[in-house]
Length: 297
Image 1 (cartoon, rainbow, N blue to C red):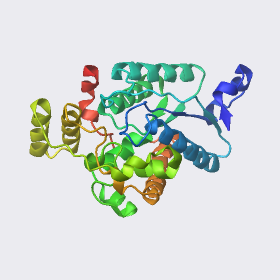
Image 2: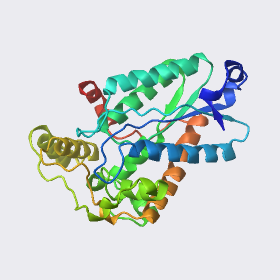
Image 3: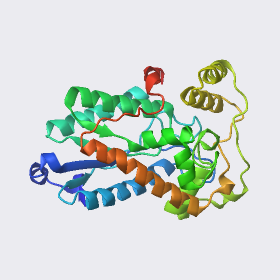
């Protein structure tokens, strides 16, 4: 495994530009209830990055796979003590600058390992990826953004693959530090999960007001999962009585986490391979048509 931070400039110079893939974990430090650590998203991302590496190394043995240092950064965080947030526009610019640097060195691929579903976070990443592709011909991809859409839309194939139901797969009823993320952590980093998860009551979004109420109404009119997702996010973070998790953590089990990891690797690797093979994506990520909203975060 090549780690960029340990390489000399001569070793970088000797890399085959047409057969080098960069991997980087990117997720914020964010409050995940009292039962999961602030680095939950980053811990999951770094574990998934190793799985990406193993699959890529097996699939493309003649490629150099280079690991960049992790970035504990993200936008659209839960506004609770402990979260460290950066503006979406800053995240977008940072990622685009990284793409410019790698592109100037002659490289073409950067794959992100991510586990944060914040709306502005995903908008910023996808906007940076779009700009990098159009202006530089550089491929930046966060495969989680595409998988996340399947979760939010409660994709039937995904539910069947996991033998799961609504509220168990990181959908809007299980959006943050609930069944899904707690299960992932029980599987990937069990020593990090506090025993309090077994006693936590279910947390739901109940009250919609102001913009969240408008968006919820529009989501019903247009049958839009994107608008509904945004409405739930706004209602949750603006609720003065909100709990720092959304879902039912006490139902989490390690086996569910393992199933989710395997599903993610299987589906997300399809997007990664399409990128390497220069194929165009037909599916746009969640909230892509509302990406202008990132300027308000």
